[in-house]
Length: 435
Image (cartoon, rainbow, N blue to C red; front, top):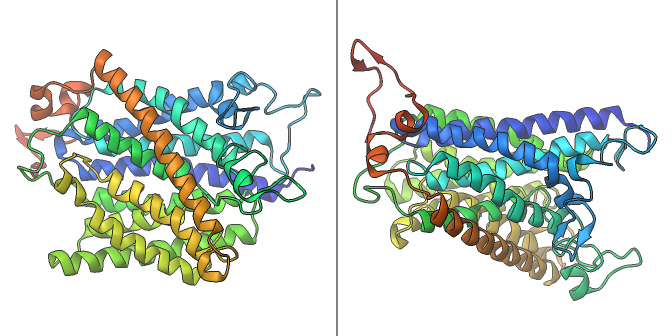
């Protein structure tokens, strides 16, 4: 395959956009916590970048896209350290089927692994040890993210390849592809359901913040939240349009659907807030943006712009309602990873079965697409849940998750990182924390 410089330029740009999403998430999450823990919250995202990049180069790519092992993961030693991935035996750069160097493909995929793990941190704000978090990042990305990425995108059990669940249920065509294949364009299962389940499990294992549901824990910096949401939206064009793997009409459709669904979700969230609480808030607008981005992620290349509006509205309403479940059921998902990412990921993944342009139930496709979408969502929930329980409990018994009560109350930034976000001037704080 000859090098396509246009496609290569687009994929390098997309990889850079997706990498930007993790610092954007740091702003989004950082603004949502109290002033005494904003640096710790942001450092959890930056720490995830450091750990995941190293792990991905060593064995992550190979576990995601290496030779198949039982349809569950790739052989970690097959391309360990990217051996045989970037250059062929003659020393020439390997070019993929889109005319893009394989090195660019690795760059693009590592950014997905980074943001997925960083998302989980939102369920753990204000109360965990930084060393335990970094250890969790390395273990979880290895045992949950890489296997699910392989199962969905690497030809494993949740793909449409021969030997997959879909192939066994629906049969295959002459090329060995399932007659009805699962659709996960950019990561509804791999990224959002995966991270959302992990966030829920860890919130239960780690326990509640001191004062949860008894005292207000309001965002300390809403402009940070709005800035983070805006940068996430910008970066998401690399996330979704980049998942077309070249600069073509499919990338254009994904870009358009991403914007349409996000706008619809934001408006739907604000309307839900207005009817429920009497106010349409900036936090609601930012959260609605993220809910729409999450929901359209698996469906960006499968829907039409009009049906993307429907998807966005459903996601905006359901996610706005779902963020209140933590108070009803008593789990402290600090920054609504469950309400936005798990619920939004499920909405997007399942509604493909109704709304997909060619195979959806509402477009004459029958029940097959809906069935396989539900199956891949359930398997992703099961895998992520089991893996996170095991890792979470092992770390609780060994390193421990919680900082001391004194550190949590006094401020995790100063105690853990030796810094504070807002310095004093003349002995008085410039910014007063809103509790």
